[in-house]
Image (tube, rainbow, N blue to C red):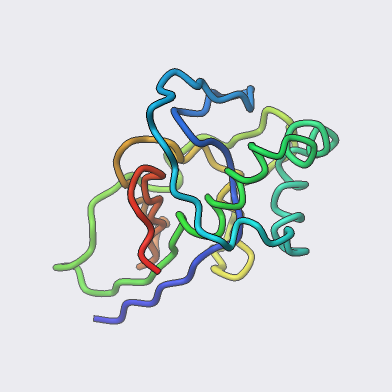
Length: 161
């Protein structure tokens, strides 16, 4: 079994509940939940992370992401700590999950977003897709016609260092 893990760059949203399409707001209905943010969310955005955000949010990126310290922190945590892309060529150990092609694009701010024709780990932008970033559970998505999987770890689970 070849298992290759990559932590992807800061992605998207939240700290408490689910994200609603077309709106970057996150319901803050359970104030007793505390998200454990690793220290790496304090570091500035990388050039690549900024490009991922800009691609999805376009002209609204400044207002919706960069000017909102809490939201920006949630995006960094998502991209840096909670999304893992790995390859698993062994059918016995592959996890079941939705196919990436079945996940709608998050094109509320960029109507020109397009699905990736050829999957490339190095330039994949998970923010383009409406993955379940803020569920209580951990979700796995399979990249169609590949042995690649995208795992989104729950924000409520402590990240192993």
